[in-house]
Image (tube, rainbow, N blue to C red; front, side, top):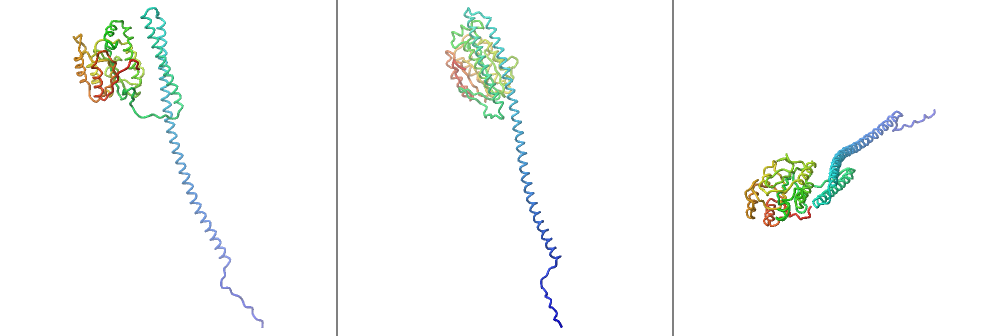
Length: 366
């Protein structure tokens, strides 16, 4: 009897199906882990791209804003260049007119020679103005190529002590007979000359040149008015009584200067009438510039006195000051007059009291 072969029995065994299930589960788990990491990475990349897109949009908006500002600046410069061209054309026309007038005069007599010299001086002044405007135009052309400009702060300019600024500037110009000369004798002598000779008076031409300089210093966005006074006060430009004019309208300023050049100084000085203008303007000025050469000689449009003493003139001045409203600086440009000793201290005191400025104008200014 043969011995039966003993079968070996293993305690741990695994079927083929179990092996496949475990392997498939491992693969599924592996892909789930990879897919989760992929989602996290994709979300981070999306957030980064969105942030970069937002920054680019902000840069685009900022660029559009700067472009709009640059276009506005260029348009303003184009307007200023056009105005400069117009002024140059006007000045060139005036030069041609003066040159044509100059050709008519004969240089034989002294009076005609003086007239020729005046015309030549005016032509030179106008030519200088043309050169100045052309220089400004060149600067504006250069500035027009810039993307942006920088404008400093401040609305007040100080030059030789004179305070310029404010939204409404009133200029009062003394056009009494004393503006013909610095001495009493020469005033009486020139007062009897023809009007064409009186208009050539150095002192009066200096006053007109001073007004011309003052108006060129005013802010473009401000307002102004120019009154002249002797025994009465009246606006330089007729029909503008009590009105404020725009500094930006250069044609009105040019008209005012031409009117002053053709105005003959005469009669006495009624400072009551001048200061009443300050009181009556509505709205009132916030800066007053007074061009004067001495103390007043009358308190009304007419007077019965032919001679008035220094004490009486001082009383008239203090009485006229009472017409001035408070809170307005009075800036005084004094053209010295022979023998009027009370004028400098009185006008200096008025400027100090009103927080204005006082200047004794030299013969070679402006």
